[in-house]
Every structure is written in C-alpha cells, then in structure tokens.
Image 1 (cartoon, helix red, strand yellow):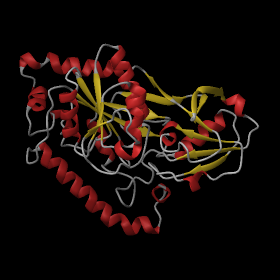
Image 2 (cartoon, one colour; image 1 turned 60 degrees about the vertical axis):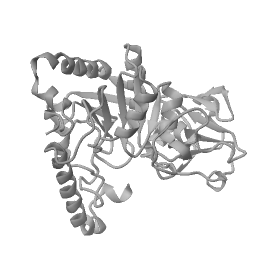
Image 3 (cartoon, helix red, strand yellow; image 1 turned 90 degrees about the vertical axis):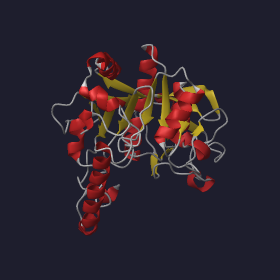
Image 4 (tube, one colour; image 1 turned 135 degrees about the vertical axis):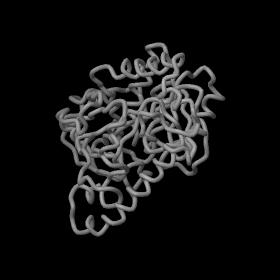
Length: 348
C-alpha cells in the first residue's frame, strides 16, 4: 500500500505492466458486455458492494449495515463472498464451528454479526446458487466485493471510496486501481467512507463513518468496558485490515494511548506476533477471530458499526422496485438483466 501512495521510480518502472493490466481488464469487461463471455443471472436480485482499489475500504461494515437495514425493511438477504485468506476456493456455507482458515475472516464476521446465510466461493455465482438452494426463502443476494466479478450478473452496484481515494491513481501493479476511475460513472451509488469529495458527479452519493467505543474481552465477551476504562494502561493496538491506520486513528480519537502494530490485510496471526509487554491488546473484530489463545495478555475487541447517510437501503429498494415495475412494458434495461449473456445497459 505504501508503494501506491506516490509515483516513484519503481511505480514508473511498473507502469507498462499497469497499462497492460487495464487493457486486459477492458477487454474482459467488453467480452461480458458483448456476450462473448456469459454472466450468470440469478432468480433473485443481486447487489454488489465493491471498490476500484485493492484493499479494504469498509465493504464489510457496509454489507453488515445493508443486511440489517434490508432485513428490518422486510427483505431476506443472503450474503456471498470469495473468502480471502482461506485454505481453498471451494464453495461452502459459513456455519457454526467454521474457522477463518476454512471460510475467511470477513465472511465469518458477516455470518456472526448479520444472522444471514453466508456462502463463500471463488466463483460468486456458484456460491450464490448454492446459498439459494440451501436457503430458498432468501429474496436477494448481497455480494461482498465483486465489482469486477462479471461472471455474476448484478442489478445494483455500490462502490466505496475511503479517505485514501485512488492514491497515485495508477493501475495495478504500478498503483492500486483495478479499473479506471471512469468506471464509477456506471454504478448505482457511491459511498464515501470518511472521504471528503466525490470523484464522480451525477451518481447518487452517500456518506459513511464507523462508530464504536465499547470493547469486550475476547475470552469473555460478556465483560465489556468503555474506552475510558482502559485509559492509563500499557496498551498495544493490533490491526491486520486494509488500512490499519484507520483503526489506530479511531482508538486515538477515543482518548487511548498505545503502541501500534500494523499487519497485512487477512494476516494469519502467530503467538510471536502478539508477544508484547504491557497490560492489554486492542484489536478489531476481524483480527480477533484469529487470535484466541495466542497470548496471555487480555485482548479487548472493539466492534464497530457503519453509520450511513442518507438512507442507502431505501435507495436500493427503490432501484429494485423500479426494475420490477418495468417488467410489463419491456424496459430495455430489464431485458438486458434477464438475458444470460449481457451486462445491464447501465453497466455498458
């Protein structure tokens, strides 16, 4: 990630490879758009939550928020994810007793927090079909990541941008971009996660931040403590997420002093990683899923929730109702949605 914040010598050397990456990505998307490659259309609406850059921008908290809001509004969502960091790419349900190594850390967190069925698989379309077969009461699919996974046809696209923006603005591997910024002109909603300005005019835009100030003990979740109760302790903060600094800034805003220990996203922790001298360790829920029993120090976990304004869930439902309402008049966008070989017109 640090390499992608600037345009140094190494970035310039990698830029030709980045140009090739963008060219191949454009060819692939064009192949789906023209029907040369087939998108799998499901019998229920699909909502994809993704981003243009490599790394976390807050997709998992947003998926949790959407799942909870849509459930409260009477829908029955299921969730699919690739499950990064697990041992294989097979399709499987994220059920009780599963570990992060089996299903991935983010899907495990989604299953525990949302109460919705969650399936993982490298092929998100296959995972979604398995979910619907096992849970036929689900009436829509939330896809955690997958903006570029065109094998799965989608009805609504939501793109996140965090405070880092596009960093140096160059394609992989010279920069963090998986698609050009112009791709955002075709999404149905932009969510700015602590970002100040929207990079694309004319797209419905929403703002999001993460809230949370009460910790729980990893070994005894019923024991909770406000941030004020941890002030004055010798604390170590651990974060293996897309942007560890975001977690550290959150802790600092709560008035806590600590030694920061950033790790790569989806890091598999060992006891040596947590061999600290002090009074306690602070970490995210995602990291805590992989750290039980690795240290004698108390681990305090900080759950966070997304706060989204205005109400993105109502915007999504309005889009779905509009699609459903066009069925009887032969709307061209709906015809494209129903066809297995093409992306929707709005994705062209």
